[in-house]
Length: 291
Image (cartoon, rainbow, N blue to C red):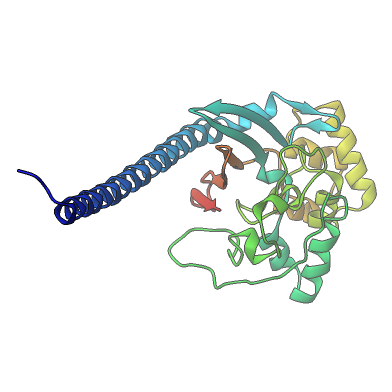
């Protein structure tokens, strides 16, 4: 059979339509496969991030005290240490910190009025690489927990104005940041063996004069293992002042934090984990913050 010009044109048109439909189907299939591949890759990254972060959290927070105690800084025991490692194609930067070496915002809030608290928190950032504005957003303390301090601030976002967590922490910088000076967690007691001078001054300045603080720091330099009882005896404090010091200072930190900054080359995640041990006046607490 001979196909005439009209019929051959019609067949060609049908073939072109079929090819166009096939191309559309193939393109849609390719898009679906690409989307599924991207989703699978994203899921794999999320799993790597999740399990990598959980593993690092458990390892670092469980041994934070011993890790910090085994590291020294220029002016005494380390208050924070940084580490970095690669896991499953994700780069993790870690910052382990002693929350007992910082000024507790809830303790300062119990000591001061709002009007006095704001400048005190600004002063504590005087040596920081970036001074963040103080924007106080207290809340009513939650019930059902044993806490020596009213927990009106449970996050630095209730204390400081910042747009990105990188403003709170920079693992590459040796200069202190706001999160190195302020904390919202723990029992509020400051570890006099690890806290810098400005923290001791801010928390216990009304009880201990500058001369006492200097004498205390010299004692720690001479005997890093000294106890609070030994320090009080060394300072020759009367009973009333000694009692006030015991309500403000301690010789052992019970609260530690871990920053986990993860980068897979296309995106960066920030996580902050805080763990406070239980004592006679406080429940054990765990906090997690993520960006």
